[in-house]
Length: 253
Length: 367
Ligand SMILES: Nc1ncnc2c1ncn2[C@@H]1O[C@H](COP(=O)(O)OP(=O)(O)O)[C@@H](O)[C@H]1O
Ligand SMILES: [Mg+2]
Image (tube, rainbow over all chains, first blue to last red; front, side):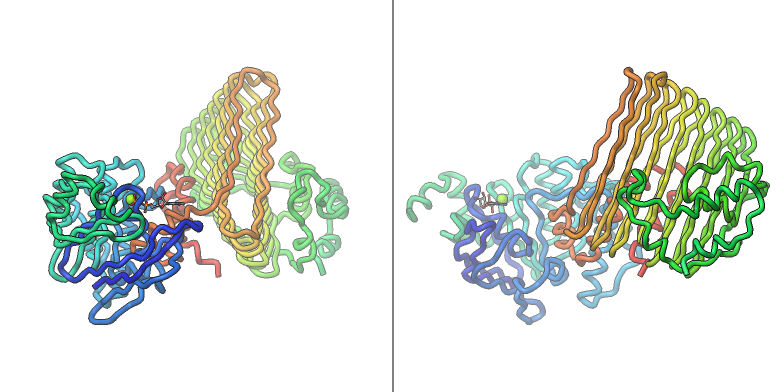
């Protein structure tokens, strides 16, 4: 579904991704771990088309209904409409734009693009309010400005609400667990598990095993200095939890 | 033929009109005049315009509208080119009184079309404890509107004004508001403007007695080679008076904005409180912003602050919206509305707020 080949990307002449390969199939959950500054957020932002980053080499293919699309040639909104979703490490505040307006506009644009019938405003509100329940958000949040004045935990929940409403084909979750207390972590994980099915895929960027206790990964990758240096199954995450990254990093230096 | 030559053939009867004619004959104010330093009136002086019919101004009110006589109205006209123009050829010269302790609504609609010009003066006298909601909308397409509204506010009267302007291309407007506020009279003024070849706003609040307060807010959305020139004066002429000026502007393409805000605090106006803030968002590198704050403060125990900021659109906000599936244009339009919303949200009247919000969301409707 998502295939990344030899991806190299830079920001202001700093090479950050240095030839990264990753293949994600339908129904899979991949965890990406790695020390701070490895390029995990960069990878997520490059896939979703953040304008600050330049791709200097490599390919990112996205398969939709048996058709291959070159994501790198598409605008961020085109990627989103094809079904790429990024839950950001630091969700952006947008004063003056309500959560409802953003969700409703985005939802109908995605429906239009995918040839699905759009929803009326009142039906959509009912639909979204149900999703609010899943992440334990009061529906009154819908009429507030996007993330403005939200606590760290509320911002992360809001990202998961968007995930549940927009129902993308692939979800990139960048440290959605960081800064959450145990209860919020459980709520967020349940949200992701409700979203997950055999037709979509999840890429989890995280530092902690505790998230992986709730959302079980099929594959675990270690990203270091812009490359994936080790891949394994969920036991790799357990070992990293115990031993840290030193044993891996030593190997490559 | 420019419209001043047509005016020179006008038959003037009274002495005050004769002197107005003389004033006009001297020509448009040039950029040498301090008040017109940033804006050229050349395009207007060269425009081919004819006197409009008086039905161009529609008043919606249940109150009595009185036609004023020119002779008794001389005090409403200052030694100013556009005031004298109104005096020379007033299409409308009217007065409305808001009775004491009454709550009233006045709708005022000014629609000026291709090739016409229109001068009007409306005097509104607010009696003590009265409350007025005033909705003024101006739409100019290829003409020139010169309108003046005077608010005489007696003690404890309140007034909320929404002034909205839709200016199509090759359009000009000079829009003047003057308030004279007695004890505890409060004015809240929200101006929304988009388009325009040239919109000149003169807003002047005179706080005459203790407790009077004025709040002047504006949001301008400019495109192409258009310009808005805002002149806002807060005159503190008594102690314990309060004024606010807050203007936000979004500029794109070759547009130009001027904000000249003046705070004047007289010597005896102690404990007065004045603030002025202007913010601009530049969407292109070719637009220009001139901000000239002027603080004339002669009292020592007062608060008077001003600030100006010029910024660009937040790239992260743009990306965030697009990463959810909104096109560039949709994202931009949402951010533009959001920028103006801060101004619109100051309106207390739910009716005016509804009108203002639909004005904001219809931002592309000038093409
Ligand atoms: N705007 C930027 N300008 C320059 N360097 C940046 C910028 N953003 C991130 N970087 C650098 O890119 C590297 C990778 O960052 P990031 O992808 O955020 O790492 P991670 O998410 O793995 O912690 C870091 O060394 C960081 O300092
Ligand atoms: Mg990161």
